[in-house]
Image (cartoon, rainbow, N blue to C red; front, side):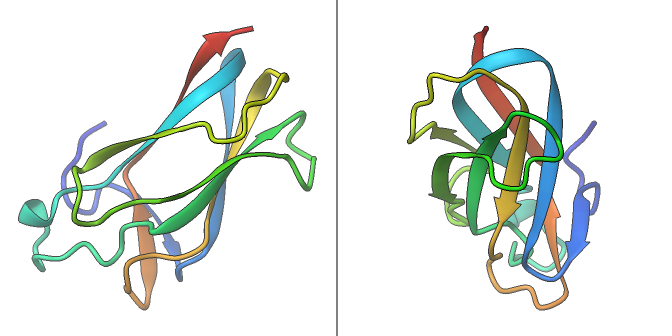
Length: 123
């Protein structure tokens, strides 16, 4: 609910994934990822921020390989809230979206995700 340092979903290491069920099926158009700015970080850096990630549309939560909607890089030197347009447009609408994080900005122990949003048009 807020963007205070430490109020994040943290997972061990630099790789992890998150599956989100939306309130309705949508045609995804963009995604936003948000992390605290360096100025709010107690250490002055945000090495725990996600770096390389992909987003997939899933037909159901048991699907192993969804439809790739795009591959992205969160810029630690950029704005805290960054928007990423869908790269691979799909004719399909999705109610389930998977965020896969492949690396962070160097934190050895964990990665923090503050906010992930899915934008789109209702199906």
